[in-house]
Each structure stands twice: as C-alpha cells, then as structure tokens.
Image (cartoon, rainbow, N blue to C red; front, side, top):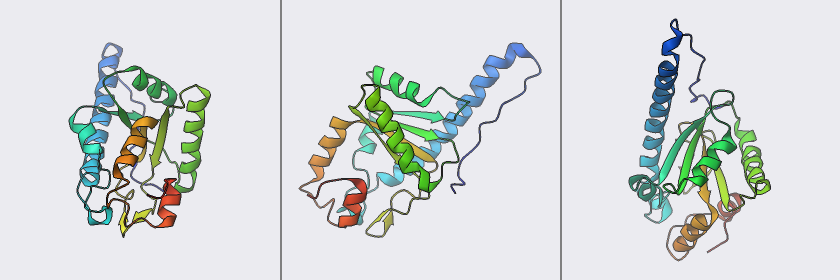
Length: 195
C-alpha cells in the first residue's frame, strides 16, 4: 500500500466570512507542498543515468518544466474538481503541453493500471483520444538496469500528455543508447516497439 499520500481534510472556520480565504490557503499549501515533492522526483528523473544510455530517465521532463509547459494539479475525490474536468481545462489552455496530477488516494499498486485504462478509455469516449495518461505508482517495482523508476514518486501520479508529443519523444530516442538496457519484458510492460 502506498503510504506517502497526504490527506486533504475538511476544515472548520469560526468566522464564515473568512472561509473562502481559508480554503484557498489550505488548497494553496497542499498544492505547493505537492509540487515541491513532485519537483524533487522530477529532479531525479531529469538526472543523466547510465541505465538509460547516459540520458535522464525522463529525457524531456526538465525542458517541459523549465519552459513552463508542465502544469501541476492535485486530485482527491470529493475535495477537488473532477479528474476529467481537470484534463478538459488543461486541454483548453494553450500554455501547457503536459500535466502531472498528484492523485491523493489509497489506490493500490495492483489497481493503478486498471485506473489508467479507465482514464484513457474515458478520454476516447469523450472524443479526446489524442490525449494519453500514464500512471506512476510509488510501490511499482518496474526497473531498468537496476534502477526502479517509479519508487521515488511521492504520490500516485497521473501524467497527461498529447499522444503525438509522446510519439515524437519515443521516435527521437530510438536510434540512441536510451533503450540499450531495456529487456523485452520492459518494452512489453511499457508497450513500446523494439528499436
């Protein structure tokens, strides 16, 4: 079970006129703390690693982050906007090309792939099949060359991106050493074609 999840709890405010400000402060603090933890994970993902042919584990995330093209959100059922609404809003904005959603939940490792399929199927039903989500669970033991790429994720994370951008990124790595340490099982798990 993932134990790294903070919990968003309802708050009680003595003076109702301060309620909107108090809720904003609580949400801002939770989002800020979540972004800080996600950024630590991204720092690690953006560090060159020999298991990936000297490339970072995620070779494109640093450029997305430093250019301001990466949006951060926190999702918790009953406490935030619905997940598909977050994705709709991200898609309608021109300033972002990807989004990381910290899903504050008790989703178990054995459940998260089904949740990923649920989201992607929901996107196709909404005529948004040009978007893909990839989920990362901190308890996932996926590894390449001895490097467990998801175990340092601070939360169950949902990466939202445009399929054409993901395909371009994959194509740009095909003739490099990036995939040299990937086993056939790794490639099958990630559903990528063999270079």
